[in-house]
Length: 204
Image (cartoon, rainbow, N blue to C red; front, top):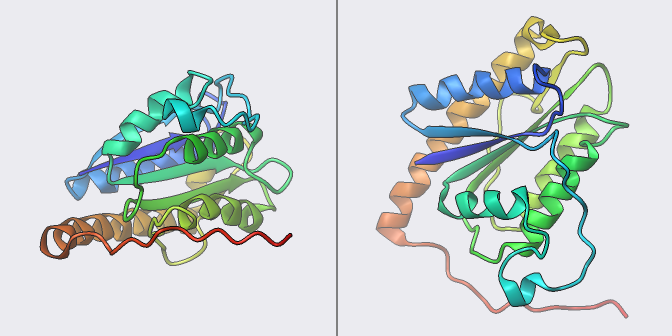
């Protein structure tokens, strides 16, 4: 079992990274393999709605998005950590997720998703909501914790002073580990849920 941890911060020693490392410790205790992948300092452009991914099976822009998609297809879960910029995940994170989820066509059903955000002060719940949209549209169960998944810190290392925030991430990692293990057992016993052909209803 493996979880991919996406670091959406461009800073080399960010509070977002501290949060991911706190979760990584718990995953390792739970016997789940992890890999932290930094995308926050990468040159990742947004989707241009060209539709080529439908023909290629990957994004036409061959960058970190396609590299991550190959790993994501084999993984059991995904955590996205993002700093808060103007009450939203930063632009690189959003470009990465939009292209990843739109251009990768493998079945993501029952891969477990979780996101958390880091802010100096405000905008956490709005940003957290944005991250969860990618999971819910893809049939991915969302792991929850004891509180909304956010930590606080502005200057380097300040998040370590947020005792409740760090505890929230540890609880999140334990709950996510339990979900992944339970789903792994459930797939062996029952398989994945029955699929229906997608019905598309336009409003005009």
